[in-house]
Amino acid sequence: MADDHSYTDHDTYSFGTRAVHGTRVPPPAERPISAPIFQSSTFAFDNAERYANALSRPGQGYSYTRYENPTTAQLEATMANLEGGAHGLVTASGMGAISSVLLSLLHSGDHVVLQQSLYGGTYSLVTGLARTFGIECSFVDPSDVDAVRAAIKPTTRVLYAETISNPTLEVADLPALGAVARDAHISLVVDNTVASPYLCRPIEHGAQVVIHSATKYLGGHSDVVSGVAVFTDAEQHRAAWKAMLDLGPSPDPFASWLVLRGIKTLPIRMRQHCLVARAVAEWLERHPKVERVYWPGLPNHPSHAVARRILSGNSGLLSFDLRGGREAGRRFTEAARLASLAPSLGGVETLLSHPASTTHRQLSAEALAQAGIGEGLIRVSIGLEEPEDIVADFEQALEIA
Image (cartoon, rainbow, N blue to C red; front, side, top):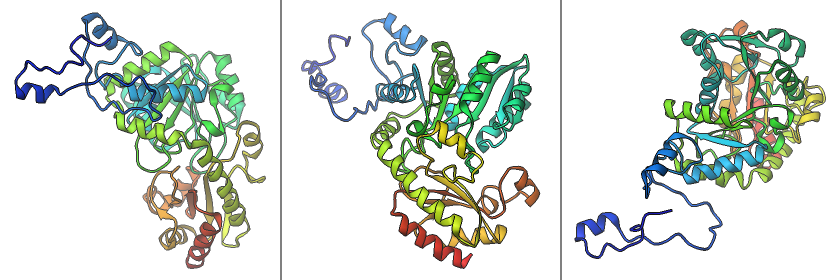
């Protein structure tokens, strides 16, 4: 409840005071179609007890936007609903979500099992935790369920996987991993960024925590940086909320609103991303200058059978190996005209990345191979353009490469 002076005009005060406080009006009785943006850093209370409760745990009111904000709360509830979880937590970036979750679940002396083909930011985080806090990490092939099971120790607390890996598009067998985690009484944490909840909902397959870089498909327009975590357990949610407060990656209300706006068109965009990706992947597979295409919708992809079981589509992300290696890859990305050489993925524009000449340029051919990345590998985030235009652009770039 608002305090008694919330909507007075302060007529008895001087001009300067009235300018500071303004003339407030009650919130509308009518429901706004678009979520309001509560662009306020702080909120006022009518009693100290409610103020203290809002500071102590999530869901008890709004005191300070670093703790909670109404716009962000709507995004958290929306994502919990879409993923089939009980609680949501929004952060300022995908790495903010990953850090808050892992630092709330792992402590000194604990052990975590992770898939080998892991997002670079996550790898950097967990290896840093290993050095700083004595957290032990084991990296395994997620498709080898026996190896995953064998890697678990009495000190294991977390099994960490990605629904679809980047850039080789390996699809994790989440039902099998969920069964391993359940038998070992540990938490399965799944990064669902590349799939989005439209293609897969890991909680349905046994995950306790689902993470997204909302910068990607959820936002969908290359105009926001945000992260989300969804939890099935209230205590794990509260622990991650506390970790977020301590670490500081709290979201901005306007960023939360941009993600909410993006989610409204998520089903339509994902259908188009997947449709265009199929056309481009099948064309690339036939091209003589392309050695291999990585897209789980293709029958020869190692994860094709798993993808058919757990995904409702095959993602708008694909990769392919160019004949000609590192130099051919560099030439291809620089020759593209419609597609842009840029980081990130999940936006409406097609984006290209050549790891060997950009993000992984310091690695030798052998080191790239160990990371599962070929010297001529091109990663493509398929946008919403017409497939024939993307194909034409790639055709002329392949001629130059």
